[in-house]
Image 1 (cartoon, rainbow, N blue to C red):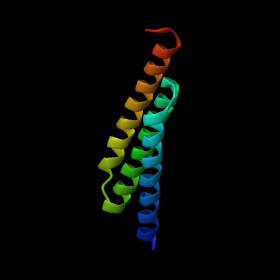
Image 2: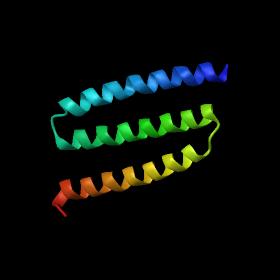
Image 3: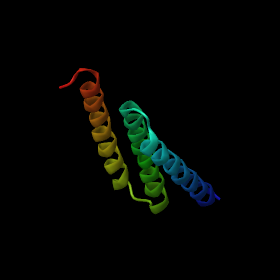
Image 4: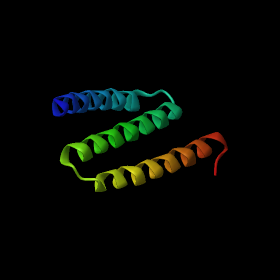
Length: 86
């Protein structure tokens, strides 16, 4: 039962990533592109978490944590650059 729910969740996350990529390509401003980039990383972290649960490997959660921290730093640096430059 839980695997069915997680498979449906994965399908919905992949659908959301497709919509986010569409927004990333057509975003009228660079701020829209940064936000969509951040949303893609959040969606991919959730995919890594679901795959970690389904494969019963805890090491993937460490990878998701590091990926989340790097994504956070990247978005902060890009936002600082867009605001007033480095």
